Length: 247
Image (cartoon, rainbow, N blue to C red; front, side, top):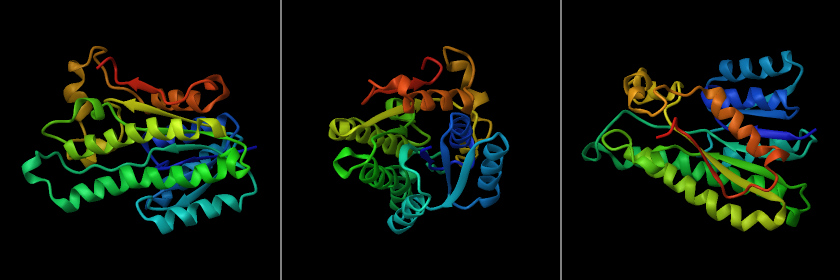
């Protein structure tokens, strides 16, 4: 058995991915920021389906909390072989004139620094250089990194652009040490994150502009993530999978 850590796993894409990884036989570390009830529900659902899981509270923008989270994983006695960097934040839709430094820095701290910190700690445990068993990392970016999210979330889009660069660079850096690093770019997916932007119904408002004429489901993204983590993708690294309905 091996451990898969999914950050931001209490809802949306993270939850769907955690459930799928549980079905695939991983022991799932369900990271959450504040909603222990939701995280516990995910853990219970995995266990009820015959899998193994445990919840870990950590704000990934806080280095001390990230270190504590990985130390908790170490105590489980199974190797960490998979990381899904999924936790992310955005704030209310805004043009650049109304963006504050505080907001920009909060977005970057979670969506960029948090991903770096989790990658760093995962590599220390997976890398053949450190006597690890190897592994795979999937970073959850966004179609916004390509499209820019004008008038809505340019700060969020820029943070996801950084995730793309992290994916490319890290994939090259650790390829020889048994670690694959890939990225998914979801588009308009039915998750709670749109409510954080002040428009819960955003997907339905704009779905007609998509070639496929519909929003995506978290499970559709989860299946792509799980494939990238699997041996079926054993020769895939530094790649980007677009999950954006053709846009």
